[in-house]
Length: 109
Image (cartoon, rainbow, N blue to C red; front, side, top):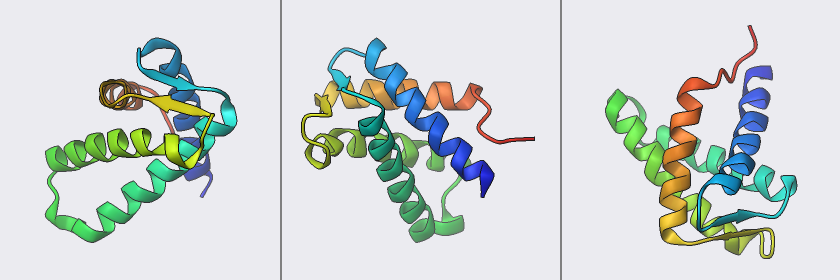
């Protein structure tokens, strides 16, 4: 449970950091980043449950990338005024988030 909370908070912080780096993505504050991170986590969980063990390691990364891009894009409609993103910005943000997520430890040991 603590690992999930840490991963959630790290994801929100990474999303906020990525908004400063990636053109076409603007997150107005930590609240918008938390909401987007929650939506990404929930949607990713649902998709993994739907596909279950049928997804390969490579497929899981691809689905996670596309899911994050779609959710980042549609988060601007869930959090009006807090998040603004273009399609290219969502794809770039998803790519950067995936790269950072592979290097940043998101569990407590």
